[in-house]
Image (cartoon, rainbow, N blue to C red; front, side, top):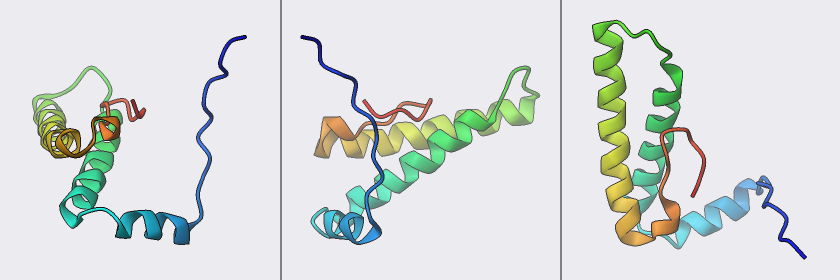
Length: 86
């Protein structure tokens, strides 16, 4: 028997708010920063002009900073630049 892959299921806003109320504020901010940075990184496609390359690198730096905070709290919260959860 093989395990089926997990399918992401949306959760109601009230449940998300309850989960968020149990987490420290800094972790919630890092989670938001990571999600926004990952979305920003996905926005860029090659070939990149120098300005776009700088913006992409800045978004990657923001993502790395947020992942450092999230990884210290719970390694399962890390976000990859592609946006998929680990």
